[in-house]
Image (cartoon, rainbow, N blue to C red; front, side, top):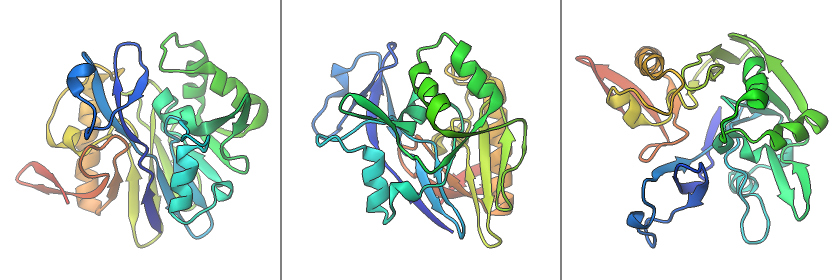
Length: 254
């Protein structure tokens, strides 16, 4: 199994939920008042029979109109057309924007040969939720053009890939575990988005159920330490991937 971090950049997010690129080398955070600063990094995993993408980033393009996500997949040595599974933790825009690609005045599927795997409840919530975090125009296009696989609850997607309905961040958020017989790779989406959230206990206001999210981070951290999972952190500011150790009740990421 090979894992590739597809770093899409750092962004500031204010109350309007717009993601504005932020370069710490030239931009001043004081110019972005009342903003949260986040990193965006989907992950590509090469398995024996599948090329898997975990979440799809913002869907932003470079100056030439090329999708940043596509560029990063090519840099990793793969063709975006070869992605055959897109596994979605949830459908907030910063995770789902890259499911489609704006090409001039047209919209195209970013991964036309892939199956997009989504929790049924999350899909239904995306159409009915009034939050600006959901962009229904994306899902309208997917519904007409994409290969969609809706799953419910927790279970086994393939021999190597399992999924677990967690809720907490959104009511139907899910996480994934890949096991190839040698390695275990865990993608916690926004329930375990960065190492710092595991290292310090806190209840986040942006979670649907902050207390449950905090408890799940603890639970997954203990499992990761016990079973030597490689954890993928979608919003990490420091380590995008890492293994968890637990000593005297304290977590550490290496």
